[in-house]
Length: 170
Picture 1 (cartoon, rainbow, N blue to C red):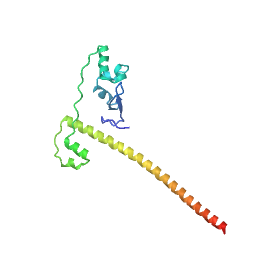
Picture 2 (cartoon, one colour):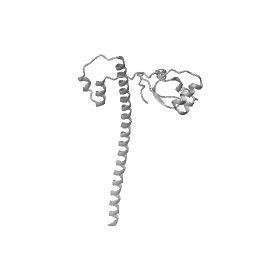
Picture 3 (tube, one colour):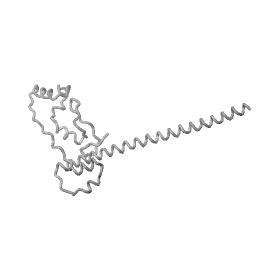
């Protein structure tokens, strides 16, 4: 499970259109907003588009129902300041400290929030994976201890058997 990128702190799930095409990750708080970024028709079940996933079928469905639709412009992509992208990409936080602070516009702030949300989400996922690996490692160590103890017992039994066999020969 992953936290929702909207920043609500809730667990997210995949939002799929009627054809099963991935539209993003959402939680209960942001699903309505995320759906509003797309044409509502793509979520209608029982249409030719839902069966095929082809945009042409979506247009045909609209014509058949005599619906007019308005082309929805995608939201402007969030802009993360280049110095932040460079620091994250290079995994070198000192690059941020070398930069000169400056005012950011709304797109850059939104981009920063999205980048921070992704980093938090990735950090949480990494913590969960580390915990799973730690548990697996502990189990492996326990199993190794059991195997080593069994080998020790087997070696001890073999040496006793060897002594017993040697005593009988004499």
